[in-house]
Each structure stands twice: as C-alpha cells, then as structure tokens.
Image (spheres, rainbow, N blue to C red):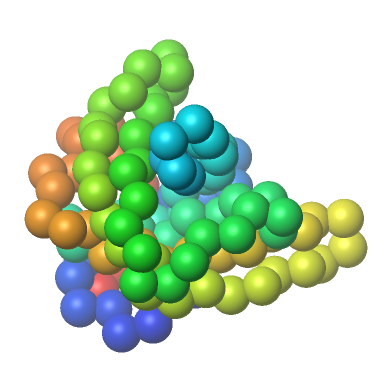
Length: 116
C-alpha cells in the first residue's frame, strides 16, 4: 500500500486491474498509466519511470474502463511522488488530489478492496 495522509475511503486495485489512466501533459502529449487506488478526492497512479509530472501542477486525467471507454475525466494536482524501481519494473508512483470530488464508477466501487 502506497500513500500519504489517507482521509477518504480508498478502493485498491491490483496490478492486473483493467483501469488505465491517461494524463494530458501540455497541449500535445499524453502518457498512459495504471490506477493503484482511488477515492472521491484523489488517486495513486503508476507510470513509466521516464514520465515526469511536476508537483503542485494541474493535469487532466482520463480514466478508462474494461473496454477502453473513457468512464471519467477530471482535473487534479500532483501532491507526492515515489520512485519504485524493483528489478525490471521501473515505475514512478504519483499521488493525485482531484480539483473537485468525483463519483467513483460503480464497477470500481462494487469490486475492489476498500480501506480508510
């Protein structure tokens, strides 16, 4: 479990989860990542280590469901990051605080592990 200052109920998704995120970086670039956990006010995402997202900067995030359909689009700010290099896995974890609380899609709420 990765995270700092958890204040909301979190829905944890395992590594094989089908929920991906696309981060809009500037006007023309998007980076794909995977959601590790999500709450009404934020999420933790894992992206390739070469991806650099600035703390305290706003980004637009699109969350994709099982059929690669966009199920949610929101804006958020990067509030923390952790470098996680283990063997061949070279990931950067980012903590995102949403600009406005979101409604978590039912398929995530009904299926995934929950904790505070």
